[in-house]
Every structure is written in structure tokens, then in C-alpha cells.
Image (cartoon, rainbow, N blue to C red; front, side, top):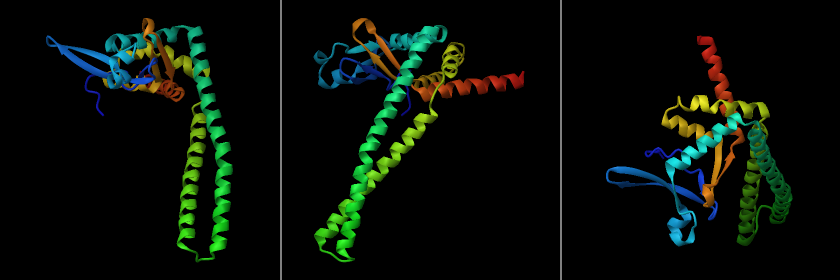
Length: 233
């Protein structure tokens, strides 16, 4: 869906108190437009249920951009953020491997049941046996598709491994290129870098989680642009 109101963080901001996405919204007062990110939980369940309610969109967007800028020049902050990114990758990989470990025995049991049922039926069988056959084939199909998805997700995670140099380059070059980008490009870069932004009601705390693949992709894009500019010079 097209972002008509220039919401830089559309779909990224989450209310940490309610664990709900904060929706971008606008109000007009005296011909002036005011933008906000409103807690989805508060909108649905009533504003008394949420301590965050809403936050000024421009202020929050500026906070996030400033935070990324600071990371570009702060080695200690880069180290900590990279550690968090790598820890999240490890967590996702472990979760997928655990799911696969539990899934494969189920798949083998279903396949064995199907083989035994086909042997018993011998090409015939009652309607009840045919129904059981269909249910087993459906269950096996679901398990096989999930096994394939897990394998593909693990391969993707491995390809997204990011090293310290990639991370440092992407963040250190964020500030120089940011001012050169059009609004749609800024939105793309922000969604490339950031996976999730947790907003806490106390003192407007922000918890930014990065996309490892996005950071790596941005570093690659910047490197390619530098090469193109170097050839044109």
C-alpha cells in the first residue's frame, strides 16, 4: 500500500506495554497536519488500557534517525548492536532447528502409516479407509511443506551472516547518504535496516532491532555506488 503521509516508520513501531503495532494516523487542526503513531491496542480496546496511547510521528522518526547516526560514530554502540543482531540470528536458527527435530519423526510416522494403509487396502477398501488415506496424505503434505520452509529459512539465515566490517560500514555511511535520499528512498532504507522499534511510555524509550540481511544489503549497495562513482570520476 502506498505511503501517502510520509510515515517513515510505518509498520515498524510497536507499543512495548501492549505488544501491539502502533498505527500511523493524522489529524488536521487550523489547516495544519499533525502526524502520530497510535497504539493499536489502545485504538481497539480503549485508551484507558494503554500507558503509551500515541506519540508524535516526526519526533519519533527524528529519534530513530539520530540513534542510527550515533551508532555510525560510536564503536561501543556498534559492538553492542552487532552482538544483539547476531544473538537474534542464533535464536532464530536454534528455534528452526528445534522445530525441524520435532517435525521429522512426525513426518516419518505419517509416511509409515500411509504405507501400511496402502498395503492393507490393496487397491480397494471401504470409504472410511479412503478417508483415512486422504487425511494422511494431507497431513504428510503439510509436514513436507513445513520441512521445506524450515530448510529454506535456515539457508537464508546462513546467507545473512553479517561481519563487523559490513555492519560498521553500513552504519558509518548512513548519515552522509541520508540527506541525499528522496522520502520514498528514506522509507526503503529504514525498512531495510530496521526490523522492529519498541516504544516505551517511560521517557519515550526506543528499542531498535535491526535486520542483519538489511544491514548487509545496505553495505553492499553503498559499496556498489562508491565503485560507480569511482569509475565516473
